[in-house]
View: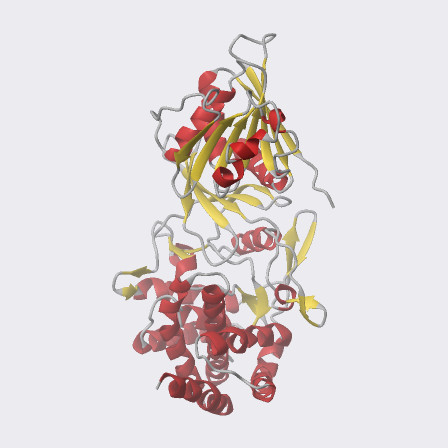
Length: 511
């Protein structure tokens, strides 16, 4: 199905406004992109190109002459070349080959003035910028039409939606800076107004469903992973209604996948010495409070309801499969037979059946230090800021406790872990005198092992498939958590599988 172009008309008052628009366009073009600049003589094509190039190179004084006579000028950008071409003097599209067009354009941002001279030689995936004089308005005003074709159409649509959202939320005058993201496909920007106030822009476009892997369903469908921003918005508001410190949503566009959020700051739960015990204790208190309530499994969203999915047996089992699919072959360098894999799944099934049938609660699923912000100016559990919960499910309360106390990115000592577990248990007993500490400890060990198994698979996949090797640094820590959990008597049979088919095999291969 052919993608319809995205067209956006923008009036600019003068040359300074034209330069500002070009600078904005520079923020969403990169290597391999083509920008075609059209318009009559004197409309401002070269002015636009000059401002765009200066922004890409971060040099506001860079000399950018018109390539009218040289036909093509190449600049060294940050990470990719920039080609500025003027085709006014081209008589036939075949002349592009003589210029070495294809060789120069490969891996570059290409800006083309008079693109119509190239005929059908330009690729369909491009951003067209048409600049027209507007003498009926003023001598300096221009009308700029941005048109995204092919793969550029949805990109331009997102950019326009962001501009509209910022205008609606009153943040059009804010500067924008990238915030380090996570392992997901979301991205974040910190917005700063001239008066110093800040907000966070979350960009979370809907993800296409992946290929079927089991029961005719994709991995994300079985694992109950959010594929759009809608679960985030619904859970955010549900958390705030319960008095928890999720960020206020100033404005949103759920269809495009955008949310303008309260900036909770940057105060973390760890420092250069590791976990900050007082903050972890408050994070544990939040979980105990949540788990002591009867939270709903369906929460309001827009004009209807969002049903929080169950963290069922299928979801728990497909997650542990990540270890045999990615960690075993690529990290442990171990080839597992189909029978060995079947035994692995059956052992987990026996452990997780009761877990999946227990009375559920909100399981935020990524409740650990990178996703918690310390809000010192607030009181009690409101000091725990929550920023990552779009994959929330109805699951066993021990999962989030294990996620926090066996933090994949920072080492939680055995002493601190026991202290935090004791604090959690005391609070649960305060809310419910019948709280069973022994059963909870069993579930904690099982779900701690399940999470560690999953995380090892995810980190191996991030390395092998997504080319993010830095997750390797966290694997020894997660392996140690897994070994510790496997020492619980309830996991004796599973520990035997790991000893025989993974740890021992890996040790023999490395010997």
